[in-house]
Length: 381
Image (cartoon, rainbow, N blue to C red):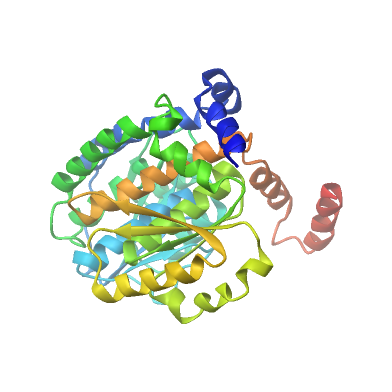
């Protein structure tokens, strides 16, 4: 293992090799995330949400993939200090409760996500109050048609690397609409400053021996990561880690959270070693956890250790918002470094593009769509 770790460290510190693998600049985009957040804050300050015709009773954020992550973060923040329920929708249609008392935020980085476009139309038909966050595309055109305001964000990067652009306008829109009473701007500025400080230890030019993110990636190399959040916000962060490991490193990863996993998934660890010999548990922790959660985590750590390596990461920051962004940012770095360890281009999404190509050929209104689909599937084989 020590020889393998030395090879891993060499890959991560080799500037030329790093540039060759990261041909589409996911690592520079990760490096620039704090600056992205500052630009997103300026965009959000200038964006005005629609004026409600009726009292808002609930909020739905509709989006997929990287465009939906902001909705998950907003939901957690509103649960902590907000005034009404927030639901994140990842489907073609809206939940049945959506009506003219619902504020719908449609988020699509490209503006062309078919599920989001369909859900946007459904929300319009139901009379919901609409606002959009996008870089353009079809969503911007439909928003203009319905006179729905749009927060335009810069285009030209993978949606998963644009979380600041997608989340921060969403957060300020929620505040301006009365969903969150306290102005989040001061906390955002503090959180961004924290990310800038953290980056000094995590960025790509910091050698392996001094870089916690590179070292964490090396610990996960060759393993199947299972990521657990110790509480509500870190469970959302755990899911973000999982999806970043999927998209950037091209590996399977799974996520869950406490206390829910103690009521079902805990028993999967009885035979875990027989199922998968190379498991790694990542526990996303907080320095302030209620005693019952501490007891749950410390007990299950010992059970996990019978079948897997166990690693912990503690979020830093004075506010919930800061700790969420800090833990997400570290996970983004880890996923990029793990991609390099596997010799992968972090930006490549060839399987997603293949799926989209098939979906473009399938017209739901065409009675022969089954035959068309089968033809496309045979081409894949």
